[in-house]
Image (cartoon, rainbow, N blue to C red):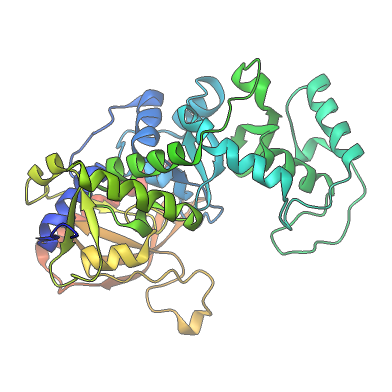
Length: 378
């Protein structure tokens, strides 16, 4: 007989998730480059994206948890301390270098069966590229002079070597040793990390343990979809692991009030999380770990975020790049902002109230906007 699932009030579920995301305390990770490493290690990944009407999302996500965050802190963590590296989770992301082994199996799979974005690279050309980096040092696509070709995709490149660099990145021969804006510098992985040989991949069961551990740490209350977000193929192994942990009473089945059909799990100690979070105000990125899993966000917060950057202007409701605003444990507004970098001013394109407007919320958001504008200026 399956163990009973305990009902968790939505407010309690939100409090546990906010505590796990470290959004209920002012400076959960401290300051400086070490704080960046600690934040990414705790969250498991921080998504990277190219949209820059305001500061790009990887910087924004870190600012939301490190109020004194500086862009140079992430650069030091990646290029000097090497505590984080770039790879694919559900999207391109910064990941703790300590977790590198967890991604080696995916690298090997992509080498054996390259997808359309990395297939078709000539073996001799690829070997020559690796030799050049070995002999001359790390390089970016701008360092390569070659005849241009027509793009096959709007996000592609006219330089054929871009595909070879992408191949090297996805199979693990290369890593991004430095990022200037969105310009990536590639280095041999072994040389960058100082390895005699690349770490070995973990077994499937160990990878499932990693996914579950990462989710419990950063989500508190977990579901199969949230654990395996971006990696649906891992679900059978993770499901088996959950069943084993439940039998050992290391996990407790729970469901959010009114949502008994959607099963979640929690560690027994996490049930002691206080019922109400601190009354913090956060202007969040649409790619923030709290926001990116849209179904989960709706289940916990009753808020359905719309990402409308690729929606025709006449069909937008919240705006091109609307940012959800969290006050306490409620998403109360969505702000479509744009940074006028020449004037050093943050422009309000559209303000949408998600909940009924309250003067106290307006004051809290206005205050948060002042700090957010300072962050945009760098």
